[in-house]
Amino acid sequence: MGQDRFVENVLAQADEVPVLKPGIEEVLAAVGQLYQLTPDALASSSQDRRLTEARSLAAWAVQRWTDASLTQLGSKVGREVSSLSSASRRFELRRMNDSGCEEKVDRLKQVLNLAILQS
Image (tube, rainbow, N blue to C red; front, side, top):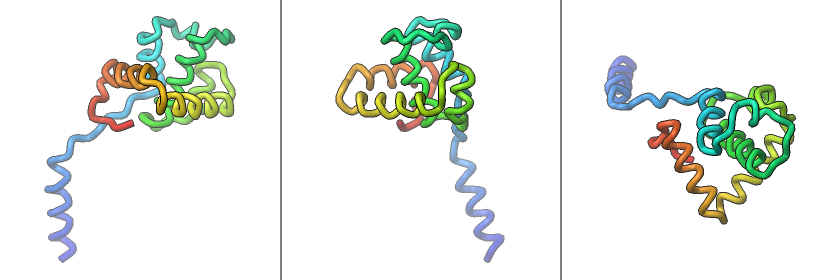
């Protein structure tokens, strides 16, 4: 009986396509492309609205689509984990009420080729 289940599970999984998750570097590159920002700009200390929105989207995407942590993202963009966590929450709230945010998520998915991922 145990071997039968094993074979059934393997056959069922053969039809599944594995989802390759992006890494932090890919997310940052895609966000940079969307906002026309360099990696140095994303890591700058500037609090320009466009930069803070881009970092918020990056934090949101890293939490949902990668296996990376906000700690790892923080080391790349020079921000504290608590700041990135708050930014991600704010982005999620804005996304619920602002179609522009949802469009950015859709465009980010396209850039990352993540059409099959659900956000």
